[in-house]
Figure 1: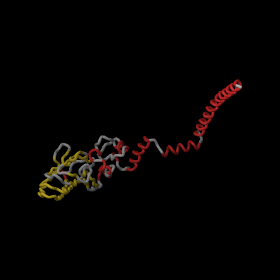
Figure 2 (figure 1 turned 180 degrees about the vertical axis):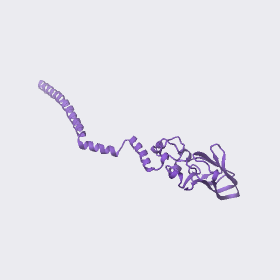
Figure 3 (figure 1 turned 30 degrees about the vertical axis):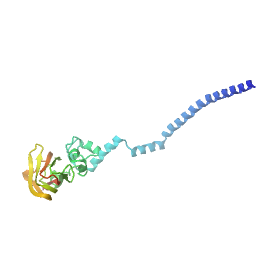
Figure 4 (figure 1 turned 60 degrees about the vertical axis):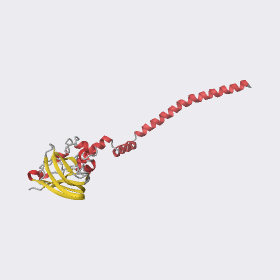
Amino acid sequence: MAASLQSRVQLLAILAIAFILVSVPLFYQVRADASESRETAKSTFLSKLFRNVAKDLNPPEDLQVEDAWEQWQQDHPDCGPECDPAADPDGDGMSNKDEVEQGRNPNCNEEKEGKEYCAGQPQQPPPDPDNGTQARQDILFIAPNGNTSAEGGSWRDTFTVASVQPNYDRWTISWRVDNFQGLNYDLRLLDADGQVVWSASRNVQFPVATSDEDAATLDGTRVPPSGADYTFDVASSAFQASWHVQIVGERDASA
C-alpha cells in the first residue's frame, strides 16, 4: 500500500515537471507571436496614417515654439525692422523672437513697466509707412509700473520709450492726485543721466484731503528723444495721496 502511494506521488511529480517543461516554451512563443503581431499592426497603412494625424495634431514642443514666432510674424506683416527676430526694442536683454516664444511683449519691458501693463500694450509700435508720414499716438508711461495709480506722498518710476523715427512732435503729461493731505508737491521728468527734462510745482495748501489735476505739453525742441530711459519723480509733503499719471507721445501726419 505504501509502495503504491509512493509510486503515485512520483508519477504526479514527473507529470508536473513535464507540464512545466512544455508550458514555459509555449508561453514565450505566444508572447513572441503577440509582440510580432503588434509590430505587424504598426506597419499597416491605417496605423501609419493614424500616427501621422496624431503627430500633426500634437506637434513637439520645440515645433510649437517655432510656430509661435512664425505666427507672430504673420500677424505683424508691416512692422519692417521691428520684425527682426534678434532685435530688442524694449531694451530688456531679450530678443523679439525669445520674448514671443515665452509669451512676453517684445515691445514692452516687463521688468520696468510690469507684466499687467505690458500685456495691454501693442506687441509692436504701429508701422511707419511712407517714411513716417502718418500720424500716431502712443501711451509712453502710466504710473507706476503700468498701474493706474500710485499710493503715497512720494515715489519714482523708470520707463523706456521705444525708438520711433522720426521722433514724436509732442509729449503730453497729464496727472491727477486724489486724497491729497499736504501743502505742496513737485513733479519731475528726468533723462537717463538724471538731468531734468521737465518739472512742475504746485502749492495745494489744503490740510484736509483734496484733489488736484493738470497737464503739460512738451513740443518743439522740448520733446525728449525716443529710444531712451526716463524717470518720473514725485516729491510731496503729503503722507498719503493717490496719483494718476500718464504720458502720451503724439506725431502729426506730414505730406
